[in-house]
Image (cartoon, rainbow, N blue to C red):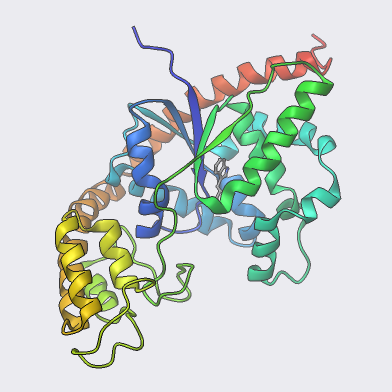
Length: 334
Ligand code: TRP
């Protein structure tokens, strides 16, 4: 008999393959959490369309890229239910009911949405984009998720979800929706190889999980370090130095990293030596992932099968929540 575990839900927008920042910020955590929770992972294609509506083909292709990344890092479809958001129309239905519970003013003040609007340079912001936090609240509550493992950029979404849950339960019926809380991963942000806060394809500062060996080598050789560390004998700065941030995240040998840091701070340790260490660490880490990933990508039917099975399980869960929601809202006509 399977134990009844608590539900957790998390997801990604499929807009391209995932990179090592995703691994550190969320994927590694999911691999652990699938042992202790009933974990749902949503490939949020509907949400991806809120800012990629002009490029639906890219979203469609990315669904499979993202799934291959999940499987390659060890998210196990026997333990985690992986599914496609758009294939569960009840989530959109729930989002529509939630729209009444959130004011326009509240939406305008969501810090993550504000930051994204600035970044994306919309000529004018599509309504679908403005309301995506509401749709994300529906994602979470449709699964009665008790916990949501996310990076800190998603905390404003969770806060809005909590407000909606409180309001719904107060207005319609107590205890229909589960109040969700965040599980933050220990390590939420990995900088780009250029030291910039965000990794992105256009900046060419991300290392992808499926990236080929040569290209990884090139990116690490060009990686930013301490800009004031000009000569080997100069003392160097470790804090905020991307090479050390990556070593902290990926090098299993903490003692060696500490020794390197001490040496670097004192002076006498060249950037090329530290980079060589990082290169070895990253290639070791990425090699098995790359190999698995390329096998999965070639086996398209297998990927489709996982999504189909996962989506069926996920949809049943959502339909059961929706029966309670509709009853609470006096929408259970027949
Ligand atoms: N907004 C999340 C992101 O951009 C993706 C996402 C969609 C999500 N629905 C979710 C995350 C529900 C957690 C829970 O990464």
